[in-house]
Length: 331
Image 1 (tube, rainbow, N blue to C red):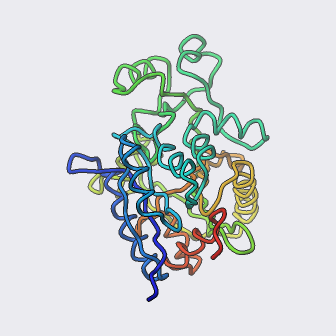
Image 2 (cartoon, rainbow, N blue to C red):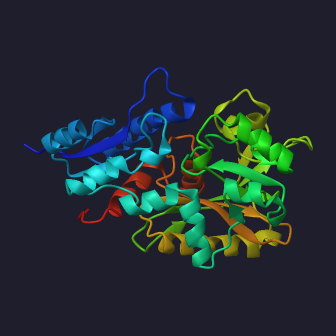
C-alpha cells in the first residue's frame, strides 16, 4: 500500500494572546498543508517552542522526508528564528528555504547591511543608537529607528521617523523594547518596491516587481509600510497603502537595476527556495536595498504570493518549486 512522504511543517507556537503578525503563520500552515496534499505529500504541522528537546524528539518520531520551515519567532522574539532550522540541521533533516546561517544574517538588519556594503551593493546609510546620540551632526536626518531582529514591520510606525535629535530622543524614551536591539537608518523618502524571487529548474527567477504606493498621505505622515499598514485593516495607513504591478516604459532601467541587484543578493546571501528584497528609490533613480527577507511570508494574501500570481504561478506550483530547491532532496 502506498504511503505518501511526510513533510513536517515547522512553525512558531501561537495562542489567543498572540499578535496579528504572529497569528498569520496559521494561514501559511493551512495553505502549505493544502498544497502539499495536492502534491501527494502528507503534511504534519509541528509548533516549535523553547522546549527544543521536545521538538527534536517529535521530529525523530516522525522521521520526515523533509521539513517545510515556516518558523519565525519564539515568545514574540525574532532573534530566535534560527532555533528550528538549527534543530533540523542537528537531526540532518532537509528543509525548505535558507539555511541556519543565512537566516541568522538576513534576520539581523545590521549584519545584512554590513554584508551589502562589503559587496558594494547599494543600501541606505546606518549607524548605532550610541553613535548618533554622540555625534548627531555626522548622520543625515531624517532617519528611521528600526529593531535589528524583528520582521513584519514589528516596532515600526510613523514615530519611528525622526527629523532631528529631539524627536530621536523622544522615540528612544517611547520605545518599549531593548535599546541595544535598535539601529538607525537614513530615511529615503522615495518610491518603494518589493522584489520576490522564486527558485526554478533554471535558477532563481525574479517575479513581477511590486511597487508599494502611498495614496493621499498627508505631508506630516511618513510614507512607509509600518505595523499599522500591514496589520490594522481599519487604519489610514492600511487603507491608503496599495500594491501595484503596473510599470511604464520610463521604469525600464529601474526595473532592470532592481532585478540585477536582487539576483546579486540571492547569490551573496546564499538564498534558496524563495526570498524577497525590499527597495527604496532615491530621487536620482538609484534603488537601494532596505532589507532581505529569506523565507518571506507566503500566506495567500501576502505580497510574495501576489507576485507569483502576477507571473501566473499558482500556490501549488510555488510550493513545489520551493521543495525542489531543498538541498539533498531528489524530487
